[in-house]
Image 1: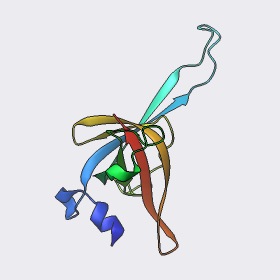
Image 2: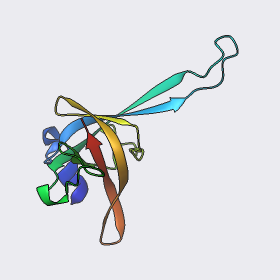
Image 3: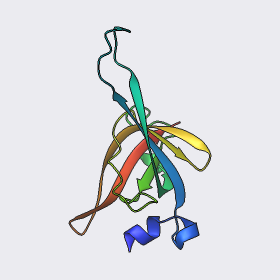
Amino acid sequence: MAIRMLAPRSKGGKGLELRLTKFEQGEYDPATGGSPTIERRFDGSGMRQDYDVRVIDGSLIQQGDVEIIMSPVQLGGQDMPAPRNGDRIEFDGEAFKVVTAKAWNYAGLDIGFVAQARR
């Protein structure tokens, strides 16, 4: 039920398509003296909801922060990796930075991810 809810509208769900970009350090390159940053992109789907004004404290949750609830399944059917702090989510034409993320648990089962995202 929840996965179908988060599926994109083009596939009968209620969600929109999104892209999760994870940034990882590559192997050390002695020629450059550093490690390149590697971007890995994952196409999925999900929903966005605004925070209730009562929970916006100006420090942990700031004005303009949103919750993005993500399907655990990529558009191609593979497992969606868990978002983490510093990842980027492109959703509905906007880019957001992940502040925090956790598994979305329903009746004892992890059925997706919830990310606090900031513009």
